[in-house]
Amino acid sequence: MITRPSGEGPAADAGTGSTTDPTAIPAAAGLGLLSLGGWLLTTTRPWQKPGSPLTLALDWTASGTLMLCGLVLLARCIRAVHRTAEAPYAAPATGLHDQPDPTA
Image (tube, rainbow, N blue to C red):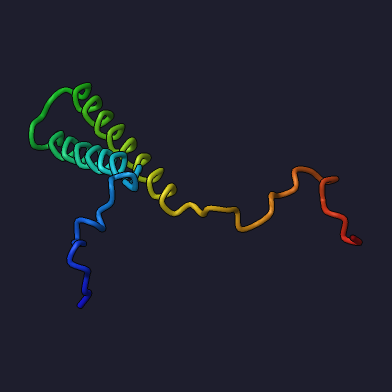
């Protein structure tokens, strides 16, 4: 059990809001777009309600676009969260003559 001085409570640990996660809103938007695209994909099945091929193509294109945008947003958020602060290796050489001198 953690004991705290009487003047501090759990609200003191919450901070002023300056440490909010900048990836929270894009990640939530990505999940929303994925779910909206999946819902649209499941509601436009031609065997349940026959319609014109043009309508089906437009619905599936919109669904695919929504799902792709949601996936891109989530991937960007994941990369931002798991990015290292510094490069773990040196920058690669750009050409044949840019190799380091092995005798040095």
